[in-house]
Length: 598
Image (cartoon, rainbow, N blue to C red; front, side, top):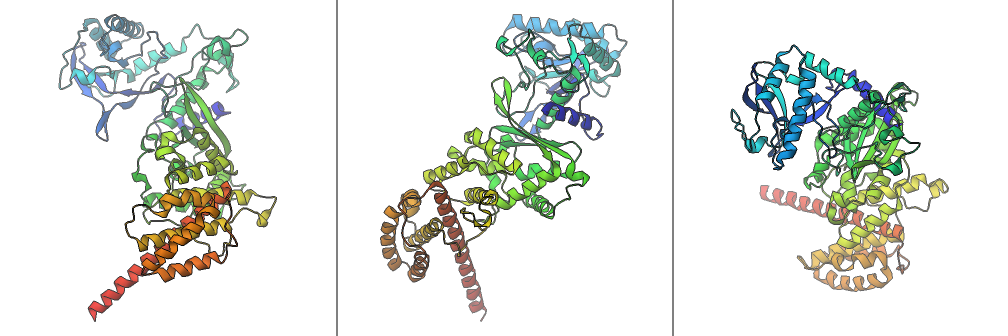
């Protein structure tokens, strides 16, 4: 199913004139420099093809003849490769090895170019015959060997546009070479059902976060224990060469740097696509997305107005709904999560649905995480990777529990309940660092909202607490009230003793949320002293009494779910107190301005 869907996506890409998708026999390679040859094979210049990426120069992705599959052996790419193959010199200092790789590169070029009547082919052959490797070759132009060494190179014919491997006669020779494979095993392809040559090895998949930079395999059999019925390597799962090229090209396209159809969820590099073009392909990345390179940046918590506008429009459309029988709603939609596993790639999750169904589920998810923000610059719709960081030690993306990330993503995409391990992870982090902020509150709200909605056995009478977007003064759940009470006591202390070194949150939040009976009596005694010191002590005293009136007795302990209610009550009350203080300050400023005017 996965390979079939990817093959169809490749076919869709080839029909789109806006997409530069490699045809069979070709692929994308990261190229840094171009060797400029004169018509008589002289090296006249070296062009730097690298692109500025931030503060660094990065190789440029170019369409080249399909890369060979390398393990420990020597195998050359056609008309492009690293300096060890193209020039016989690299930075590793293994002279025998580079001499061998260079000879293999020359032999492949002679094999495919010798009979061609093409100026570019002749220039390459003459250059390779004349070239003599030296430890630090002198290069023409401004190129420095220290920059060129070990980088991938291509050839350019001086005065001509394009690269030599793109010349029609050379492309034709390469395609003919690709089709000639006398060792290929004929059989029926599991993906297309067609008879034809089967792929013994599948091209590497690149771009999976944490996998080898050279790529890893989605389909791979390289040990006897994996083989059966005398079949070797990928013949154990027979996929035709055409289908193999199609699915790997499509997947590499989705995983490519800068792809808008790729997001990071925990350790899973997640790609998504629809069978036919859809707006959801453009929107889903905004809802969840960040590239793995940015997953640990701290400046993403700031609000992005364009992102908010896009998500807001999507949410409105999801709420309005699209008829189930509408063509766009029936359009198949796929989500694939891949994680690294040594030299292979593991499928973390796979979800197949439709555009209409996925839009409804994403709309539910956005409603679930919507909660009053603590600060205006916080994202109204925080991406999933940012929320999942709240479960990780030190808040680092690399520490997000892999299984948890997959379970949360699966719950969102399938519309099922969020895992109980999410609640445990959130409670554990809050108790460890005392930070109960906006992002954790959003996740806690989503957990309880989803559980309540899916609790069909109780319907509207579900024992699971209903969580509102902001402070709910009608909510009489004891744990929620205790969280509110703790927030009021904390604010009272802050007003009574400005700049106190150790707050009650630092000292008592963990015990108050798990063992209220042993903690709150002591906190209330401290509160009496704070009430006397604070200029607004009488206001806090009234608020404390209002909350205590609805608490019959302090529970001895709180369960994990009750602790979740506690922290939501705490967060709601903190935001409410902050909002009221801001309004009071604004009113005082306005009054002062009026006095000055009078």
